[in-house]
Length: 152
Image (cartoon, one colour):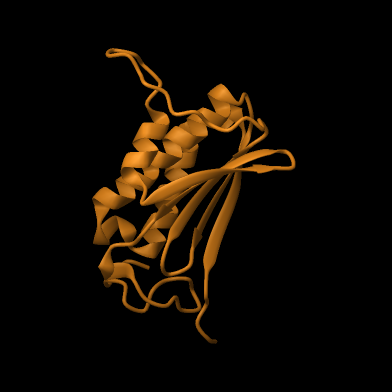
């Protein structure tokens, strides 16, 4: 079988499932790509972004969310779609406030992020460039030929 150009996963995240289920789901997929071993801090950043974007969808958009993770060998794209057409607004959180920092955190951990309107809401996508140890083409199982032993 030839090289795969991209691999992806998608999951519906109902409000009732909570954010933890989304974090755990993404962490499992990061492990299959070897990101957890190659650069655990970057993997933690992806999981933090998942947490913030799902929270925004559930709390601010009052919506279930579609969570999509795609990897093309250059950028890991984390997309969260919700059913509220209003774009997210970064806010300035007051000291001691329990919320209001989600997009600031996503901006801090992602290489870049953006939002686009859709027919039924919006999608927020963050891109993460991989650590050099997991770069390279994907094989037929969706792992990297250059991934460290045990990473796939």
